[in-house]
View 1 (cartoon, one colour):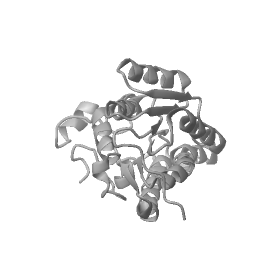
View 2 (cartoon, one colour):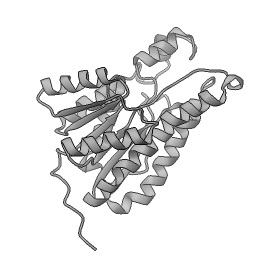
View 3 (cartoon, rainbow, N blue to C red):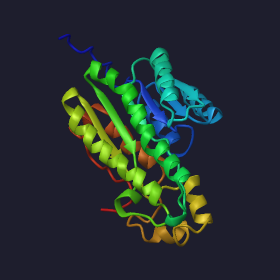
View 4 (cartoon, one colour):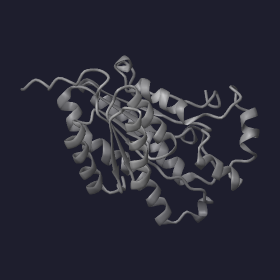
Amino acid sequence: MSEPSPAPAPGRRTAVVTGGGSGMGRAIVHRLAQDGHPVAIVDLDAGRAEAVAGEVREKGGEALAVGGVDVSDRAQVDAAMGRVGEDLGPVLVLVNNAGITGFREFLKINDEKWRRMMAVNLDGPFYCTQAVLPGMIEAGWGRIVNISSSSAQGGQQYMAHYVAAKAGLIGLTKSLALEFGPKGITVNTIPPGFIDTPMLRESERRGMFGGTVEDHTLRTPVRRPGRPEDIAAACAFLVSEEAGYVTGQIIGVNGGRNT
């Protein structure tokens, strides 16, 4: 049996961030680039992906925009990961961040809505992870971070399809951690809680979580909403060399709202 190829030097491992064109994904891209990783932004919106890649390059980082990719389509995912490998090198860091949300009374969730939610939020990470794992196994080193949701821990009314998909992602994380830990690959999940993003503000506007952002801030132990950068900081640790003994974990970043 041949020996695994040596992993690139710490600080320069090609990273892929799905949904990296906005919100938490954009913050994660910037943090990983700041830490020295070449980063590929895989996003459905090609314009946003290129804009974020340009921001990284302006700061001296190395970034590749791979836009127009629907993570629920295996062929598109495989093509995207192949391009990243050719342009930046083997993918050794994967952040499964791309996702969609939705509010609907349970009895009004039809097959189409259910399947689309599962396709993006659960099938997407499945396809992306399968695409990059062979390279990680060959290198004997890899980091996978799945962005789930605190709603998967406590539930959320009118979001049964979203919560089910994100809960599935937590289960996937734990199973992969057990299977691939012996290969030098860690798999963890971050369930963000109450992060101030356009998605959160839209939920507030629609009155879907009861009260304003400010109302919920007063009920948050640290007395502020989260920032995308808070998620990026946790992600940066989980993909680092120092986090090699952390795997299969749910790393809540929620200001103490869920303990």
